[in-house]
Image 1: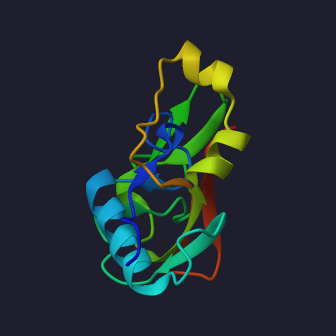
Image 2: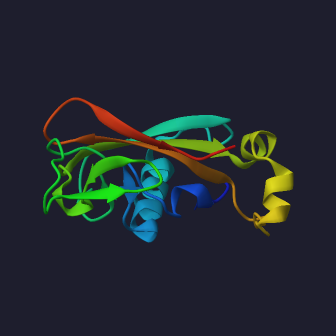
Length: 151
């Protein structure tokens, strides 16, 4: 019998600012990835793996791409970056989402423990895996936009 698969999302994927792809529903993404992994990942002891989700993504993730933004009602200007970005509501719908999952041991090796202590981040002992990146491919092209947690 396999050990239970307990997953969490790296906190840097869920806090603003969001330029590029965005997780819209933490709970639904966790459920989708957990269900996929419980059914399709033969070796739960793998250090990392990729999960390709292709259905039911609307409302769970948002792509980071859309029509070229013009300075109008579809865009917003971010002062500290000096660039124009498209409002999220105009982003192309997601076609697929490639999720990078680390085992907790690899996560701890890569994650800066000083940073974790500074921000009071504690990983509960029952977790076995962490989502550390998403790559959302939009419905208009074969290009994706990536969101990677800072390590």
